[in-house]
Image 1: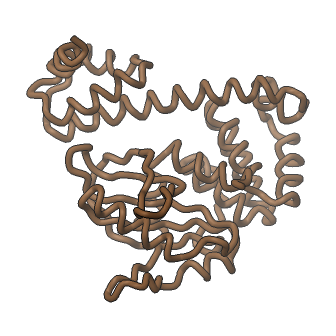
Image 2: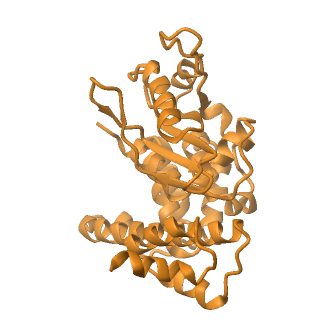
Length: 304
């Protein structure tokens, strides 16, 4: 059964798919295609006649019609998953999307990270994939508040990996006061859920001594307890808004990457749209339209 740590780590990567790119490129030194397009997608891999197998998260780089690279993000707190399953994920991604695939395993535990860092004996001659693994030792201990504010996702991971160092938690807490309240609450929640009890207590202690916005819905729930229902509702709304924002950004990135002129009224219409179904339709057409305005015309034709 997934744990709060597992779920928060996946949500952290899902909220910002570019984080998987930064981890592989900046922390683990892997070359990746130069593209500003990175999106989280829902995939179920299948190994007939066996059951469907679902990875934790799939991040696809490049425009939808021609993906350039696939990153399969797996969160492992222990050594229960057969490494050959990771090899199957990569093979299935290559078969489905016809591009190279990398498996990124994020492990809060050092021994688990060491276990999954070995090349995988898949059982197929010549196919011995080597997952890229991010363990505690690969996560920088961020003690500079400015650096933490510039990279809040990594700062949250640093609290998970190095939270026993008071300076790491202090830098994270200081960074939260520089972020918009909604984002600060989200990153605090991720860091809290991913941390061990000892680090959680330190987080609570330090946050209570700062200018943390305790009037925010998240803070009222956390310090007052007993407001779980309101938190769940707000979290669902926040997820929907975040997905709409990411979809709008993806559409604009595709149009810009194709060199199309995107007038201000088109940008405003895309950015203000909250209909995920419509945004997905626009994203599909963004790869083929001749002008930015054609985006809306093609979507209208499809609805008729």
